[in-house]
Amino acid sequence: MRIILCLLLCFLPLPSFADDLANENTKLNLSKGTKQLGGIALLQLNKENPDIGPSDVGTTINLSPTGGYFIADGLELSARVGLGLHFGDMYHDLPIQLGIAFGIRYICQKFSSILPYAGAAAGISISIPDTGTTRGNASFELPLGALVPINQYLALDLGIRIAYLKSLNDQGGASLTASIGYLGIQSFF
Image (cartoon, rainbow, N blue to C red):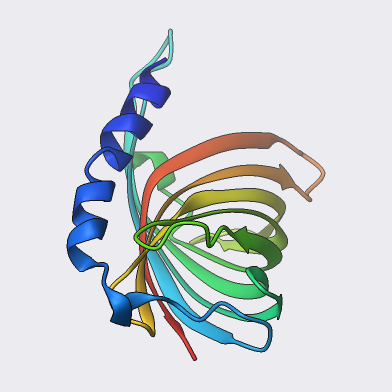
């Protein structure tokens, strides 16, 4: 319930903000053959409170340049590389994570001021610890969000990423995360 409330609060001011930006010169070209370049940044604050033992605190900074190509009107194939930097007690031996993912997303063009989208992506990542061997993960992601056009070539990307990570190592393990508050910028040409 708290997640739904947070989503509503995040997207509630968008219509008025987007209407202020929208005019004849802000319609994005998302037709077949259009290319997209952009990037996403995320600051994640984490805290674990186990039943037994001390709590751990950590901070993650994720940077992901993206690129894509529209194979049909509103339908984009995309690729992204990612860099994750980890700080704090929670990540004492895991400072860097590198990844690559490929995906597809559909951008609904029914509205002029806000363009909602949904998609799917899959990829791999490696974690590079201070000591020991690297660890690999497979990832499956559902990006959900909205593009808010600034002009006919540029849009803000506001969204959520629901991700399932599965360890590729013998010790295994999996995690499901919902990162709310992705902020990015995308150009279309």
